[in-house]
Length: 53
Image (cartoon, rainbow, N blue to C red; front, side, top):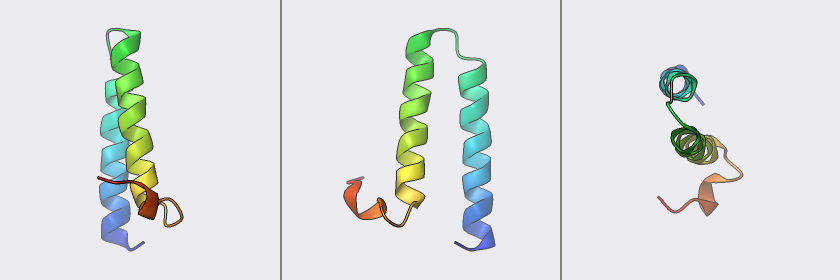
């Protein structure tokens, strides 16, 4: 992972954290956690081949 990819991942993580922190209800927080899980899975070399997006 190079510096540009790490910067994109950091910005994405910050946006998702803010969305989780200020989400109005539990359903919105669950959706944010789902998106965060997909982002992490797409950037993990072991799991990258198993995520079909």
